Image (cartoon, rainbow over all chains, first blue to last red; front, side, top):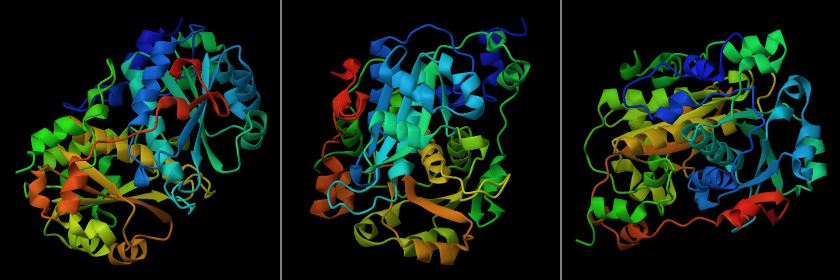
Length: 208
Length: 208
């Protein structure tokens, strides 16, 4: 065995900075999921966290379609997977499709923050999952048309990500060398001075 | 005095559910900010949390323009405020404009998750701020054209929210009755059975 799931978790944790929310450091996007089902009480807590996300005009445009293994919704989401994600995501015991209402419910006008707010609510699911010892992996690589049709998602809703959720397993169970290499590769991020400016292109003093 | 800032914080905390990240419960969008400046070390931590957000293809499309009171960037962001936000947001010691690169840097193709991922990174700033005793309030109500022009934001970037950041003060300092009433109004959210489905429109068993 190359590494255990626990060792991969240690490897993937972001370099700890004192005072940063531990769940932020611990959250990463695994591909090796075990068969272990996720309790309903735990699922409820993940969405409870998402529910309190901020949103434009408090519209709360987010809706989540949750497929538990063995259900028609899980099957439909598996059928919507494509490319590389087919190699690992079907094993996840839970697949979640996030969608956002395109227009404000108060006046029918386009909500330019629908996807933005869905992204915020969804990352709270991921953080809460990390806090509870689960892992999540959001995918953009799926057939949106297929998912919409198979799941009867109304046109009024825009599709966000398809998220795999479950408990990690040892990377060797992924079977392919390429997948195993990805699973144990270090996480990388741009440095703060490329992201945080005091004027356009000018790093803020506190990130220099 | 109606209520102190601390009493408002108690009032605004979401109903605690055991095991939910405390920062999720504590985060809310205040309008009453004190003059107190935010230390550079604290600012750095807020963006450190954002940096580890997930993103499509790990593009990290987010960039943040940070205006500290007294700088040209803070002035420009104040000039971009409109409507109701003019009544309170100028007092915030820090104003932050989030923007997202529209196309993938690897191949120049449109990134349909640019705003979605910006929303995720930005809510991590808000959570980390809540964790550290600060408050944030994101606004969509600002003149995007003005902000873009005054701050030289290139066309390749899409604008997200304008965020006020600072320490809360007592709601009475807002001065107007309407603002004070908003500040002390309870937070509301849709129930989980309107948001989480097992099939379209069908609440998942675990939220019934």
